[in-house]
Image 1 (cartoon, rainbow, N blue to C red):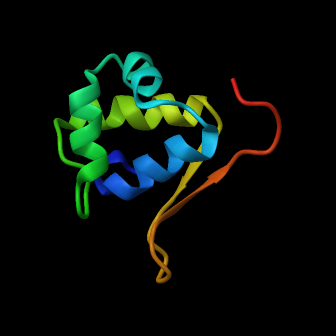
Image 2 (cartoon, rainbow, N blue to C red):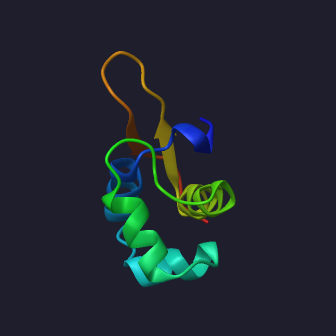
Length: 85
């Protein structure tokens, strides 16, 4: 999935799914907590600079998240099988 189609709700759901606080995800993505909060609060595509959205996406993927693209049923998230890195 491309980071440009990532939604704020997917970010929030992914973070909750892996049980990471906002401060931890922000640190892993090298962004500020307020920036992450703005992304998560976005209706539709995640608000923010493309490189910041991509950094959050990669940080959550490294924690074991798979982002599911819109497929007629809406975008979503799931956990990867096996241990997270």
